[in-house]
Amino acid sequence: MIELRLCLQPPPQRTESLLAALQSQARLARLARGCLEAHLFTESCNPRNLCYTEAWDTEENLCSMLRSEHFTRLAELMETAVEPPMLDFRTITVIHGLEFAWQARHGQNDWRPEEVNALPLPVKATDPLS
Image (cartoon, rainbow, N blue to C red):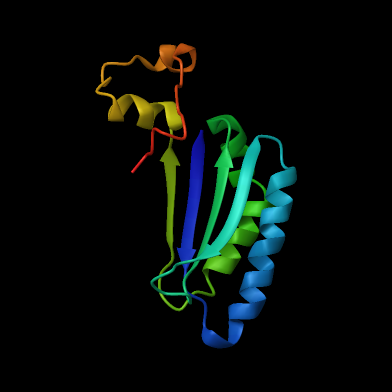
């Protein structure tokens, strides 16, 4: 999986319109082949900063999007930012669920990724996570 992450700060008078434009981009992205999810949110430490993410299943599908009108529109929106926007692409090779936390809490640090789904997950109400 590859994540596109864009953070930018719009001019105060353009915040609403940029927010609406990015919401529209997220809706379109979710319809694209290979897009797993798209989200828009604000930073808790600075609500004026907008963060937009897309998760793609393969590099091929991501590259196809980067050559599309969709990314052209994202680039145009980036140009409206008050300060240079931050855009990066993050490769996520392994995703772990609750079983990873259980294993770490029970000293089972020597797991192999291919075996994670085969392990039992004995989580009970009497086994608090905190």
